[in-house]
Length: 382
Image (cartoon, rainbow, N blue to C red; front, side, top):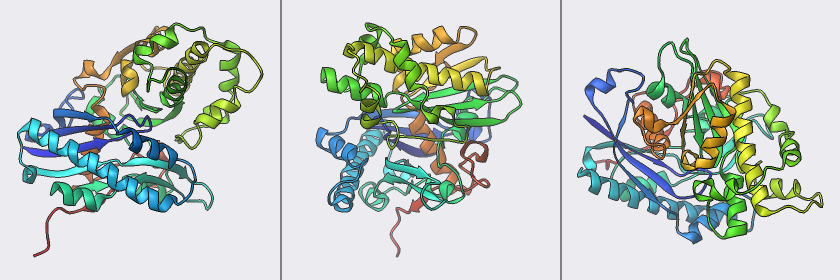
């Protein structure tokens, strides 16, 4: 039995999800598509302290003294990560020396692959050395940069794990992660894997909800469900060039953010905030459905993970738009929706240490498969 820890803090900025994952010999050898290659032993979610969340959000944009602020924010983030690791070990009743590695995503601040100089960059805030020091466990992080250096988008990286965990031979399936950004993995019946970011998931809805209700999210989608979709406004939003881009493609807060939304509401029309919320939910659903119909019209099932899987209204919208497709949570495949991405980064850490590719070039557009991640060993040099 081998143990790994996966840590994920995503675009939604709601906090850190951590899993203690185990890999039994039988699983390592490969089983059926519905048997994940890593299984979660326990899960911990830790919300960000408000001050840290505010700073991480502010660092998505240029500001004063940002190098200094980013370095300190990385330390603060890693201390939260270390607390999650300690809690996982306590819940799992496991000693730290038995964990092979931590796979830590870090917090994405900027994502500009291919931009400016032809290579661009992706920046996930983290201090891998400090995390190794605080936990006494080897750390693998900075997963996206090597794919970007190889000409790829550096995202999404979860499709490789989705294929290992959720593929069913002979059946066309899709896996949808609804975090801050929506990313779609297409598991083709012939074994092929495609994937890309479809556009905003919770990032704009959370922003609007916080602004008008003081709550960080629309729990269950109840507020959006009470509003009316503004079809003219929705049509206008869907003309954003990102939606028409062909994969490989990825996006984030660099594009879909408060200025994006505010600029598209400055038309003088009087609207109720709940109607805007309803329209934002419809934007997420319609953009996902359009992407699925365009790139996987034969998909028989759509399995949803991420925080959006708990948004009943959003799940209802997807089900209504995709009546010929089974729409369900990844829980039906044995993996809780809030654990999938953390498990993916535990899996990517395992792949890195084994010298195995972590990217799917057909997804990211990289020139070829690459081993992803930078390693910070736990051990002291004697």
